Image (tube, rainbow, N blue to C red):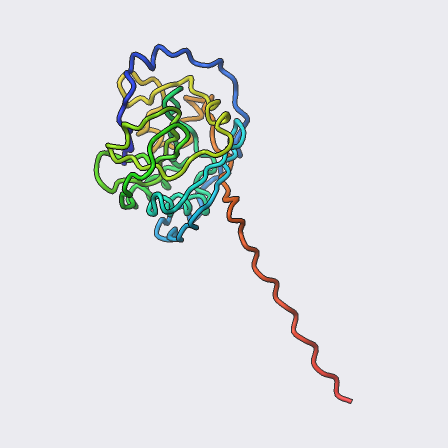
Length: 247
């Protein structure tokens, strides 16, 4: 399923931007040979998100934190929370980075995982937050109820997206400088007018090897971890009391 955002900035403007100096990103963890069973089964990812939670993204450029209030977008918050819990974002690349506009991510390194989640969309949420700089928003197709696993972070005031039904679920509360530093030299994705960056379709069908081979400077996510509320450790089991000694 394609999840393409409406293009609010002219292609000529984007192409006129000067790409930052090429610098190899810090290496992300080596991808596993095969995806885990939980990544292949969206039906198991049905936990209810806390009313408020924070997620730390550790990337090849550093860390940033996203805060989500479930009341803002319950369906979206629950999906995002579950994706983090099952480790979906590990080795996920920021494959569409348009300086001064937005950063998009959420396609799995594994084609089989992208395929599994493409048939598990969630219901739309009403737009309660505005698409201002720093907000985290679900990407979707033009069809209703088409959100799956893709997100974008707004780098500017993109409030015209509000009327198109793109629903922010949270905001970056720490590390926005890291977000802005993610490699943007490839620009717009191939499917958009004038795009010279990664193809969304090939990223979906071929996974991380396609990106690593053709767009080696892309930054990616090393891990995404829920840091608030802190996980509650299971209570230690008490040893049974020793039997009374008969005298």
